[in-house]
Structure formats: C-alpha cells, structure tokens
Length: 298
Image 1 (tube, helix red, strand yellow):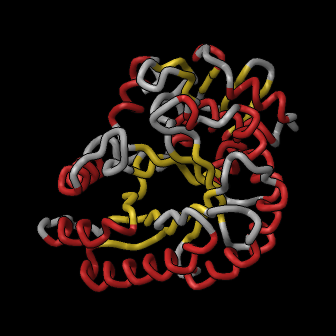
Image 2: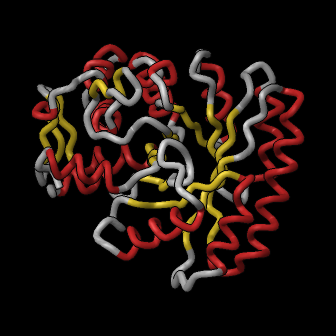
Image 3: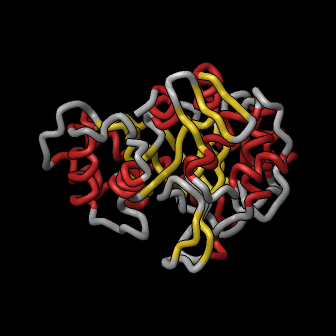
C-alpha cells in the first residue's frame, strides 16, 4: 500500500457491526472488533460504535472477556423524532453513558457521542444543551434535506462541536445526492469543523449496488474529494465530479500523494484533510478491505 493511501485510510473506520445491514449480536460484534484490533486490520479501524440503548449489553460483553487494552467507544444517542423528545433523549443518553462507565471500569474509553438533531429550527437550544456532553467529542448529525450553511455556522461558532452526515442506508432513497455530500464537506472544511460520515460507505468507489437498487457513494471518492478540495480550490461542482466518478483508475496513489485527473494533493494535504474528516461508520471492516485488495490497492 502506498504512503498516500495509508495516510488517507489510517483509523478511518469506526466499527458499527451491531447496526444494519450486518446487525451482529453484541458478542459477535465485540469479538470481531477485538479480532480486527489484534490482526492485520488494526490500522484502518478506530472506535467501536454502540447505540445508547445497547450500552449495558456492551458492558456485559466486555466484562465477560479478557480484552487487554481498553476499547475506544463512541455512542450513538437516541434519535428524537421531534423537538418535544429532545430533552428526554439527552437525559436517557447521559444516564446510560454514566452507568456504562461504572460497569466497565478500565475496559473501555468513552470518547465520542453522536446525536441526530431532529430539526434546525431549535438549533441554539440543541447546541446549548449539548454542552453537558463536552467531556467527549460530540458530532451533530444534520438532516440531509435542509441547507447546511446556518447549522454548520452555528456549530463552528461553538469551537468544539463536530458535524455528521448520513450517506446511505438500506434503500436508494436513503442516499443523499452528490451535491448534498459535496456541499457538506466543502462547508465543513471551509469552517474548519471536524466531521464524520456514516452508512452506505462499504465500498471504495461509487457504484450501482443491487442490494439497495441504486448508487452507493465510495469511501475513496469522499476522502479524495476532501483531500483535493483546498490545494486545488475546488468548486462544489468539481467536488461532485470526484464524488460521482466510478472509474477506480482515475484515483492514483503513490508515496508522494494523490492525483485525480489534473488535481493533486501531497501528503501534507492528506494529513490536513484527515485532521477534519475524522472517519466514517461501517458495519464491516472486511468488506472495504476486500474491495481494496480486489482493486490492487491493499
């Protein structure tokens, strides 16, 4: 693997094995995470993703195993369906996280909290309430159907919150357009907001997939677009060109950097991009790596 690709992918996947489509049991997910961590896949894997409603299950699974070094955990909060449920969701999540740490002791490090905002109409209230979680990294999942400018501006003003975008699901309608993804990434980079993507990024290159009966975004597409954005002063439309490319030969990695057509990013550009693009959630580690191997990249 080239130095450029290794830097682009280092610790980029948060393992979300308990979520669909894999939907592993908690014990199987923990065993998979530990197996990846001790094997040849440890370089690409970072945190274990767990919903707040399953933290007790995770704690019990960890207590039943000799895990060695503590695992890094990021919690996905209860998704309130509307503004009226917001406060109750935060109370539940805070309590679940506190109980989890009491149960696991030194078996886990709770490092992140990810919560879907029910709307952007009450944004000031939501961001204010999230201050009580500032002992961990917090990522606010924004509704893809809304404009990002005001919401991301408010997140940037906090100087500590991160942003998150859902990039797929179990059917084609769950995948945002390339325009939406490009806009989100471009504005996060311009505002220097740390961000995550989640769902639908199982494969390196954008392609049609029968399982969703539609196009799935590629993780090399989104990572490359992020790395190439600033050094080439890309427009949103140019970023969309990268996001929509389905030809893996257009993405060239070597020990000096990354090239896509006439646009280039050196190793420092890649490192700077990853300082902001923290990673993405995936229910599989093997599938992305297998695809990379099939492309001759790993």
